Image (cartoon, rainbow, N blue to C red; front, side, top):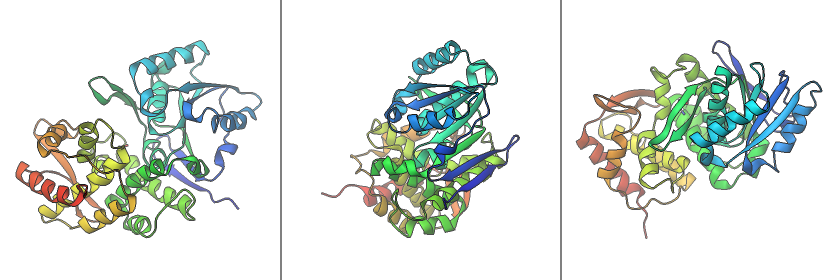
Length: 356
Ligand code: GLY
């Protein structure tokens, strides 16, 4: 029998996240007009399956729009063009937008759904681990501006998510691995059993137990989002490791992927905690790096990364706050003085710098 997990995000209204192999064949949506916004890399591979499943509903009119691949869809030009396409297709208030792709696709599609006619129904079919455990849960949608990442957007919760784990088997190994960094982060901030499960074996898209692992990681995010949908408090804990990660991405002009940057960022946050006398998890985050084998870093200068970190979205007028762990699964938000940041950086760099 097919393994299927359903996680309910307890918001008002609530919505279900279905996780299992082959579930995109069984999608049913009760809308008269539906537009699937799909990453162009899925045009021949998964889009036809989704359209065929949706077309089994005789009464629905189904359309698709192909979006530029990955992050290249998250801009004002694609946003505006896609809104016009929805208008030309005659979508009305009771129509639905479906995202098919990774996190960038659902960010753009969700923002389009939030904006068109001031909001139409939105569904997500995530196709990467990262999108399944993170981007498709919690309704953060948006695009990048020339001035920076995710500077325009809206909270627009999906009405349903179908995470088909069979789709992960078609991903390059490095793209699969990226999402494991977010799943590991969920373990560190909330679920020690998830940490042990991730470190207990080398995970691939074919690993037995993957469906349950993805569902477990989604449960962490679903719980946090239900408690704090608009990131007034505990949702910020999901940024554990991300302050340095975003700086690494910016300083390397995104040649280091988000997931790889998060693997390094988790290790830096662990070093910060150790310097502050909090729980020492540096061996654990180091073990994760050894397992993940992220792309080696180029030479990185603390002053430059510090500049990027201080422009991080968690910096307010009083300065930057880091997510740190008082104990495993006990995150806190804290200001950290510059000397401690620099000392932790020196230890972190000693640990992660490429050896020749
Ligand atoms: N990716 C972090 C969040 O959704 O809050």
